[in-house]
Amino acid sequence: MRRAGLVIVGRTNTSEFGLAPTTEPAFGGPTINPWRKDLSPGGSSGGSAAIVAARSLPMGHATDGGGSIRIPASLCGLFGLKPSRGRISLAPIGETLAGASAQHCVSISVRDSAALLDATAGGEPGDPYAAPPLSGTFLEATRRTPGKLRVAFMRKPVNGEALDPVLVRAIERTAKLLEELGHQVEEASPQYDAAALDAAFWRIMSASTWTNIQLRAAGRVPGPDDLEPVTRLYAELGRAVTADEYIRSVQTFHRTGRALGAFFEKHDVLLSTTIARTSLPLGTVRMDGSAEEFERSVAPMTPFTAICNATGVPAMSVPIEWTDDGLPIGMHFVARYGAEETLYALAAQLEQARPWRNRRP
Image 1 (cartoon, rainbow, N blue to C red):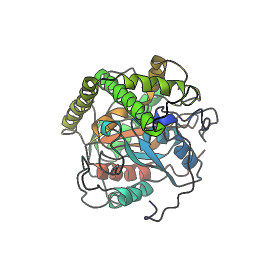
Image 2: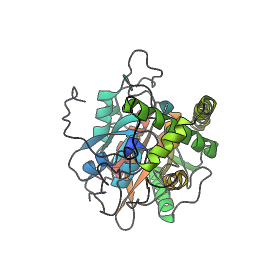
Image 3: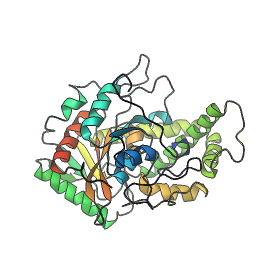
């Protein structure tokens, strides 16, 4: 980033170990959503999203292990794209969350996101996987038409509950806009075992949390006040995950990836909302309760995002819809593995059709 000419100005807030889709850590305190002071900006990259939404910076670094770029982008009215697995090398550290985690940014404009990915994309010798090569650059993709895309849209999560009517209307309006822009649009959703994927994600996440704590503690046993209760709880759950359970969870990721790959043989893009909520009041996701309470509060935040991490496909949240009282609704677009150029071309088209730059807190 420095070689690209960027100036790194500071460090922003995040949830502890990136576990929560909100940014209310005991260390640092809650980050406030610039759109309304009683709302969370989401997480785990909520600090970056809040400072960009407040127009203090044009973009901020963010990471995404289950939606942590796209969730705060949605709640803060920003553009946020999670790249394909391997698009940006994670060297020299090890792969995180069994390959589910990726790095990039939240930004005001599509252009800046694309230019940054051009600067940071690429592999290192010996990387365990590599994203497909590009036909040009991501910035060039924002300057050309996406062509006529085959777009599928979902009115509800796979095997999930019905969405708030406000979100359903946002999906239907976006589907209509895509038709007006010349795309082929139909209602369809991928078929996979959502419950098995969810269970696999929690196992891998908890095992990774235990390992991360051990690495950072450098042999010291964390004391009772060193970790938030839910972080400690998931670390202990992760400590108990067996090799068999972990390997089967990774296999579930791969099996789901093949199901999603088959879906993208028939469709170019999958549309939904980014999250299954219209907003996230502070205190909704708590780090001092039980695992069951935590997972219930997280469930509406990740039903559309986490599958993209498990399978490694690119996805983006685009701020083109709004509630009646003026809060942003991020629309979620997913493409096949390696197809960031398709997403950037579509995002630029949507940005021109429904500009959001001047809609600010």
